[in-house]
Structures are given as C-alpha cells and as structure tokens.
Amino acid sequence: MESTGKYWIPVFNILETECNVCVANPKYVKGIRGKKTDKKDSIWLCDLHKHGLVPNSFIPPLPIRQIRDLMRYRVKLTNFKSSEKNRIQNSLTVSNIMLSSVVSDTFGKSSMRIINHILKNPKDKDFDVIPMLHGSMKKNAGDITKSINGNLTKPQAEK
Image (cartoon, rainbow, N blue to C red; front, top):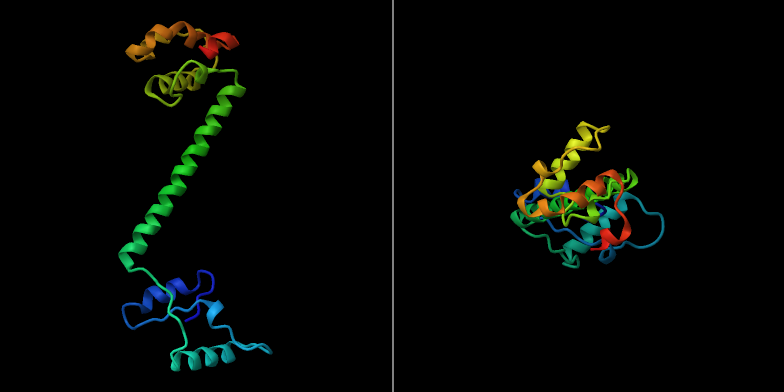
C-alpha cells in the first residue's frame, strides 16, 4: 500500500490485525512517467513488491500510535487554553482593568473571584475586594482596587 496523505491510515488500521501490511513511501515506489492510471500504478507496486523492492515504512505498534494521538491532542488543547487566556487578558486590558499589573497570576483563585464578580456585576466598580483575596494578597488590596477601577498609574504597576 502506498501512503498518500492520511488515506492509508484507516485501511492500515483494519488490515494490520488480519495480514502483514507493507506501507511504502511514494517517493521510493514512484512509477514510470507517462499516462498514469490507478490500474497501472497498482500493477507497478505489485511488481516492485513481488521482487522485494518496496522498502517498508516503520509504523509503530497500536499502543504507541494511540499514545502519540493522545499527546498531540493534549498539545492542541494546551495551545487552545493558552490562546483563550490571552484573549481574556486582552479583554481585561481593553476594559481598563489592569489586574495583571498587581497580581502574579491573573487566573489564580483570588483574581478569578474578582473577575467573576465583575462579570456578574459589570456596573459595580466600588466593591470590597478583601473578602475575595487570599491571605498574602490582602496587603495589596488598595492597588488591586485601583487596578480594577482603572486608576492604576505606571509607577505602581511596575513595583
């Protein structure tokens, strides 16, 4: 079987338990030039295979392929999560909520409590943030309140 794109994968998955499948890279089994048809191509592949001239591509065993698929999906989800966090951060900045300037983790427990409160009560800008803050963050309550109201100046943001 010649591997073209991803079309060979479902066929390989079905046949691998029933027979010994030889998957060949098209680069190594290219037919002669001229009028190419599927029939001529299959005859050419058959002749090459009959004479042992088809180098078999390495296809990892099923458990390894499944782990690879899971890892690729995990990377995709991680990238998606990062992209969404950047979007949220951008929305906060555009809304003049400079929370990232005064907290180390914009998506930590305390910050998320503040963000959720803002989302539920968009008009309420003068709320008490202290009950929402983790113990170590309470000393920065004033700066956090200023960052929510958009009153945070540059020198305070750089501290």
